[in-house]
Length: 93
Image 1 (cartoon, rainbow, N blue to C red):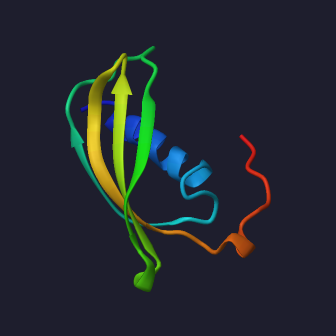
Image 2: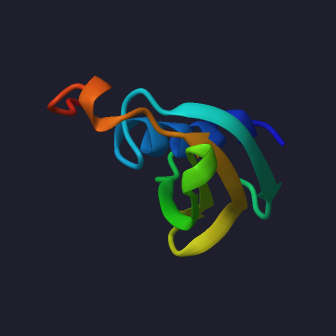
């Protein structure tokens, strides 16, 4: 699907910039492409915490991208956030 990688990158930006935030290490991601995204479409990413695995320092996330309320990507990700001490105090972007 043309542009699928670019569309999926919106999820990476949301994880790196906001949840859990800068310094997060991507461990894996599963994506299911549901509908095409066309030039000019505005893609919205929603990332939700599904599970905290404290003993392993991992966070399981649900990831969804939509265009005009229609799901175009559905999936999940596994990440390892860094400690709050090692993160920058502000997020820019």
